[in-house]
Amino acid sequence: MGLEFHTSRLADAVNWARKFSLFQYPFVTACCGMEFMATAAPKYDIARFGAEFPRFSPRQADLLIIVGTITERQGPILLRIYEQMAEPKWVIAFGVCASTGGFYQNYSTMPGADQVIPVDVYIPGCPPRPEQVLDALIMLQERIQKGEGHSQKALRVEAQAHKAGQLKVLP
Amino acid sequence: MLALERLKERFGPAVLHTASAHGNEMATVERARSKEILAFLRDDAETAFDFLSDLTAVDYVAYPPAGREPRFEVVYQLYSTSKQHRLRVKVGVPEDHAEVASVTELWPGAGWLEREVWDLYGIKFAGHPDLRRILMYDEFVGHPLRKDYPKEKRQPLVRRST
Image (tube, rainbow over all chains, first blue to last red; front, side, top):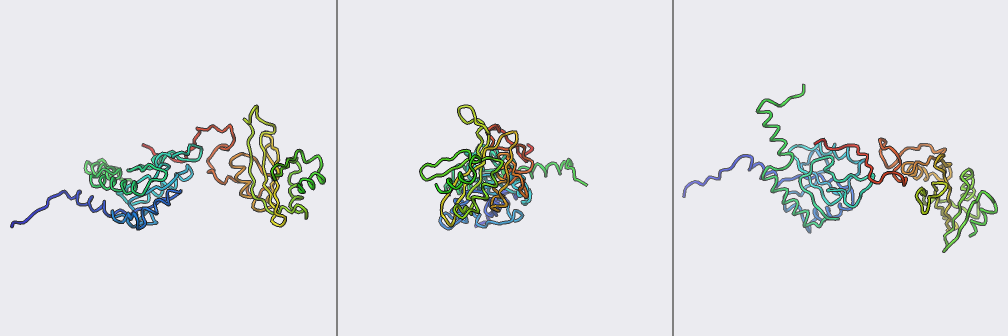
């Protein structure tokens, strides 16, 4: 019996750790919240996927779940919450309202949260079933493992710019 | 029925129109005397409308066949907790002078309802202590529930730069 080595890149190991320790910030504005609660509760138990702990401060979270309709008036609030989160961070649009505005097409409703912040995974449905939410979480985990989250990509671009000495640091 | 009789008896020509159907009673009253009439309905022992259930407005600009004059109507839904009866009072409001007397002195709960009507219909309430927008943001231009507000018009506060 010889020694066995498992070789991997450091980034893969880090991403593996990241995808199973998501700290979610639920930005709950509407009826989808009930379905989010069902997903988080014991029956569907989102904890099985390493995302059990909702944090009620964006500074302690790396997964923003936008649950429900976003109005234009909420836009600046949503943007501020997103900007407060530590990087790398991910965003799920939970339900059709958060994804596109849903059946609201009027003066007050924002046509999708991606008008203001980047979204990694969209969940359709009004509301989506908990299985869809878990499916979305697994999709997100796959993206995290591959390093394809929007914030992971942005960080890589920033790191390359830093290496090339192109990064401008503000005084 | 009784409330309508009292109203007509007391105010005569200032009560422009009354109707009663299926237990729903309604009176349209003159705008210049609306506050006086509503105060009477609240304080009179027979009517005793001590509770303002709702206050809203209607825009008749495109009402078939050719719109209606005056353009707006402010609608008061009154209820009496002692007599347990209801009355709907309407006040016509013209577009060029969209203003009615505030009833916040009669029912303090009217404060937010009047702010909502101001916000969404652009009808002013004379004597309101703090007539600001309540639902839309301060940057919003216009009054979105007016029927001539463009259906597709958006006034976003913030958008992603990319």
